[in-house]
Image (cartoon, rainbow, N blue to C red; front, side, top):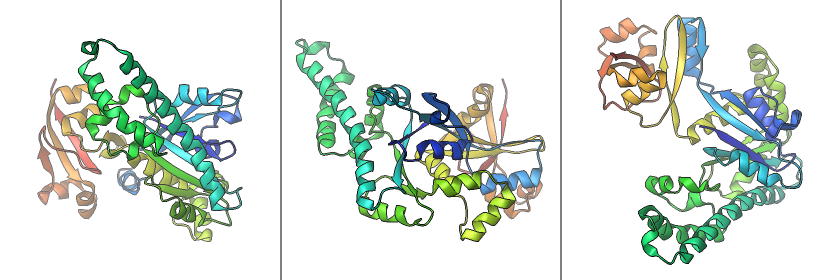
Length: 344
């Protein structure tokens, strides 16, 4: 699970990467590719830490990748290092360009590059299939791909990304070997000037994108990231802002990947475990350790809301009949607090 950060030069993408992960972007030390992890802001997790006061805290994390692509063939470096990412965070310059239309042009310039790259892949594949004289040599999967690719080609030629083509989950799975760019979920982040924070809303209104659009002022957020928590709150209060924008972006990126968290709690550690939405209990147990999944017996579950409603006391939750024993078919909910019973 990784999110690749893309953006034209001077858009602020490496600055945003540093704000979210605390790791210097590739441009800072001339490295082609840099990886970092961002902690997912979660008030529920913070409250559990406050209640248990554990020795160790482990929030949910989102991995990001920043590519510093320079030289004669920058696109080759991007393709080589980001083709395996699960989604894209597309950073757009909304602070140095004088009007929205130019920011939209900036967004389209990179988006068209991704679309064109995918179109070339499809055209080459279709040419190869057309040249195969022995149709019996085509596998069932290639036959299915052959039926699907012309529709995707039509979508790309219309200037639209593959993710807008209405593909089923099975079709998306079938296309994984192609490493298409525009099939990946995308979050658009507009980097705005500190005196024009509403620019991102104007951009979203004009662009009419299916992809989510969020705004951030990297200049303000960089100042925030350098402050301790108390000073951050004072700074935000003075500007009339509820929370740092980078927190919203990290959560949106987390959601974009179809991920959620469940918690394990105790005085030794409070930890948020990252799993896919719709994960069943044994698979969730496997996020902790393979043995937990292999020897799964039951999941002892209470919801976060029930826990808080009963004064942060598991004993009270149990007395109220709200502590549940769930089996192998239980689908874990976001925010569940779980203790797994297993035997190996």
